Amino acid sequence: MFSRENIRIENARLYPSEIVNQLRTALANGTELHADEFRVNFYDLNSEGRTYFIYISPANGNVTLIATWAQKYTSTDAKSVEQHTWWRRITEHILAA
Image (cartoon, rainbow, N blue to C red; front, top):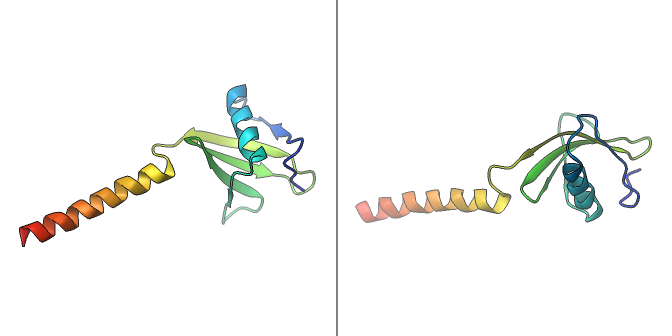
């Protein structure tokens, strides 16, 4: 079982300790995990402009950091850009009529 206390993170790809500590903090704070629909016990976690791809062992709750990358946009920024583009196209269409 996964526990927010005493989180053990296996850093198989030797990411810098700052990255591992950011992941640990995100997990301890209860950041939402998004289950991978194709792989059991694999999750995506988005926190502070980074995405983490992790595996949580069902046997002992250990977390393995598989990969991490900087997000191009934070979730709210991406939605805002998408809405802005959509709204601009509608406005241009109405003004052109």
